[in-house]
Length: 413
Image (cartoon, rainbow, N blue to C red):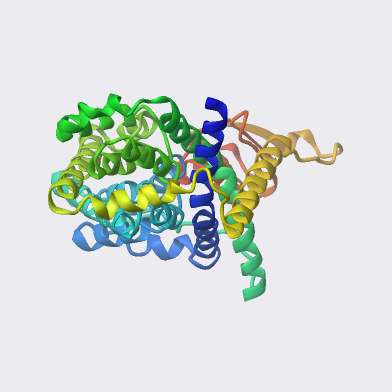
């Protein structure tokens, strides 16, 4: 009986999210194919509130989770972006994204979908500006190296195909695991956690928000995967403000990002980063509970699961089936992705490098595109599972490692 109820809860949440998730993936592909990263780096090279705001606005629509945004931000910083702008980009990007904003609207309603990017913008600007103010060192001049653009085909039709491939294959492979984890956790909470468990906790919202932060930091979850968890918490009796803290703190603050930030930017910047994420999430959460009607958030959440035991709409079912098919395909393609090479290639030209920091298919694709653009490189094979890159060509190990480091990763020949 519990298994049947779990399946009903899982499918109800999936049907509510799938149309908007697919729409978000499509928009993500369009952004990837038509907005070049070099356009961002030109605007982020100076200290001041202007660069910080631009970095936040650049980051909010980008559908990157924290594992994908870390190397991107490190790359921006090493290519001339200011420390404040990089911090702003780091805060804003993993908390939102076009896919998560659309999915937030589908399950939690329009007010939550508006407040989420607004909170990301406020926290990112505050954190980035604080970093600029606290950084007493002389700002480095932007390097002469420009951020490499993806090797996209020319022409609208070719770029449209590239957008579809990135949105529905690469993006699904990147966030699919965390989306499934979020759906499963949400269904488990809905079925197996009694409502009485949250009754006493809801009476102390600030304490509950701090507890959510403590749980969210080690529990890595992407922006889209946090939505069904927040929904299930609201349906169990926790306030919308407490659920909002999960939405914001979960995707942005985790041990992996904190460790890498500390090593790259120092403890002071890392402390400002974490503090901006936590304080902004809690302040917005308290404001939601004290200033806004709870019906704005509870009613959409209840409506999203009201039809749990009824036949779902045909369109929602089709979208769910398509999303599941894409997830299965991405999983199979990731495990079976291999490259064959000419056995007659001179082994002197073939070198293998250990790369640290790759956490998803987006990371491995970024490394591969970076190395293919390097002079003297003829062939590249990146193995995400082993954390290695096999490079064939006349490029020196120093040049290869420098390109990988500029892309935001660590390299060892």
